[in-house]
Length: 237
Image 1 (cartoon, rainbow, N blue to C red):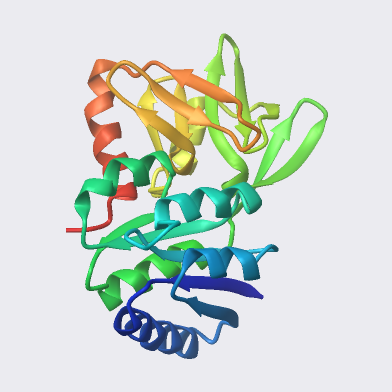
Image 2 (cartoon, rainbow, N blue to C red):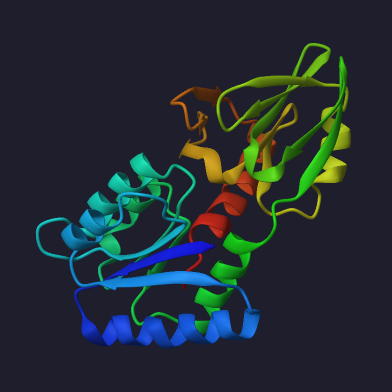
C-alpha cells in the first residue's frame, strides 16, 4: 500500500491538501496510508520505515522541508518529494535534492493530481536482449543508456552496468513518447529523475549508490535537453 506523509505548519494548508488527496484516492480507487504533521521533527520521528511520497512545506521551524527531504531520501531512496512553498528562493536547493515537483502556494488541485498520476503509474517493464539471453528491467531502474564503441550499456539505479544488443537508435524509438527520458548527446539517453547537475558543460547522472556519470552534451542537443529537463522538474507556473 502507498504511504504518504504531508508536513506543513499551516492547518489551513494541511486541510486543503487533505481534501485533494481524499478526492484523488476516492476517484482513482487506489489505497493509501496518509499521515499529516505540523512539524518535520514529529514526522521523521514517527516514520522510520517506508515512505513513498512526501509533501513538504519549506518554511518550518527547526527542521525545514529541504532538510527533512534529505533525511527521507536517506531512509527511502525511491521516495518522491513534492515541495510546496511561498518562497521561490529555495528552488535551487530543491533541485539539488532531486525534488519530483516544486509548487507555489496555494497548491493547485489539478497539478497535484497530475503529479500523483505520474508517481503512481505502473512501472513499464522492458524486455532486453543481452549476451546471455533475455532480461526484464523496469523503467524506474534505468538511470541512463550509453553507446560505447560497439556496445550499448544500461546503467541501472544501483550503478550496475548491463550490456544490451539494442542500439541507441532503437532505444530512441522505444522511448520516443516517454517524457521521463531525454538525450543530451547522440550517444546517450538519460532518465531525467537521475540528473544531479545540468549545465552546457556537463550533465551528471547520480545513481542511488552514489556513482556519478558525467556526460558531455552536444551543442545541438543541449538546448532541447535542458528544456525537457526543466519541464519535467519544474512543473509550476
